[in-house]
Image (cartoon, rainbow, N blue to C red; front, side, top):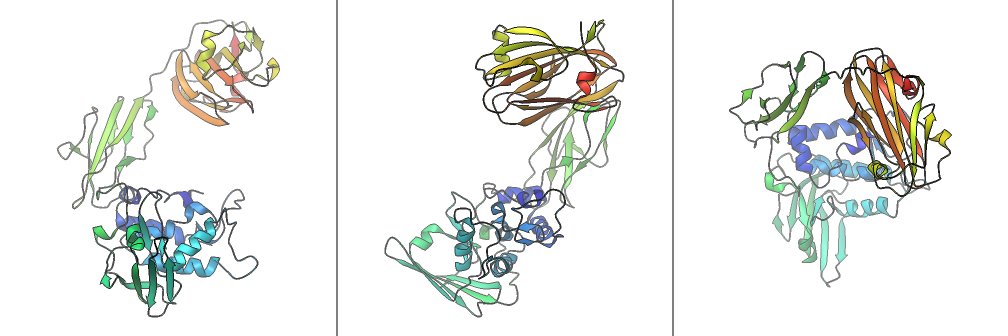
Length: 445
């Protein structure tokens, strides 16, 4: 679910933290995950097991989540949570594993975490540190050296008070691979109360692709696609003290641009660019949003003779629907709708171009939707609206366009490569909201 995948950016947790509003916001976001109601709404999700709030230890993309506190303003929470997960979800019973082991992933998490270190980011040489389960662990390295991990204090305590590497105290929340391979001794001093001063410095944070402490990027909650007359655009940013500056002409904003103090009134299409500034942070990345005022295409002056959809059927290997434009159709005709079922197509390697005039009774912004396996594209009055081209499994493509009442030419191109065949065409707007709406209002000359 989105709960589990929201924090899954192991290569760039600093970037994620910046988007959320900073290290405090990252901690609050993680708290919300672990403290949420455990109820799951909707369909049955067999992999969402081993839950603390909406954290699901049985779903492997969650496995790094408890370690993300090491990047936040509350790094002591990592050890408390990993201790709890080890105790709750690895039981010495016939059903002691919360989920399946998936080629050893669940077991590997246990081994790493129980000795006090976890490889958060693939490709990085760092291991995030957490409170070990054992009083003493000795790793016999391939180079003949030994790396020893010890616990001082009660190993049942869940917080880290101090860590020393070869007798020297370290304040960082990670250890590097070469430090392990060099051999030596890593000692954790545990306590029953969190040390809220340890691991807070910038240099204490583990690796992240983003290295800057950036302000979070602004965003808009306003629907700015195909607005009819005017539109108020609301800009937001996930930081209480951020200032937003913006431009409407496509130029790059900075702190000399217009300061955002109230919703922006738009009466025409515009390219909105916005940037946020927070004291003590570098400026945010630039938000770019295209606001499009509806320019309604007029209806065409045509007199269709009957209901239906004309088609041209092709066979041959294709990489995209455009390949049909260079081929000769095997047959043409009129069918009842945007479906190849009644055309008796080949099992694989065929394509169809459907054309018709659709009769719209209302001026509106219409959304057209394609669901297909393999590729499909949809044009209205010669303009591309929904793009879902190429060889792929079932996927959806959609787009919007402003249309006046009257007849409008529609063209749907479909190509089948191999295996499964599927094409569904839908429309929302003008009182229609269904997959079958188009066929009922389609005409041919």
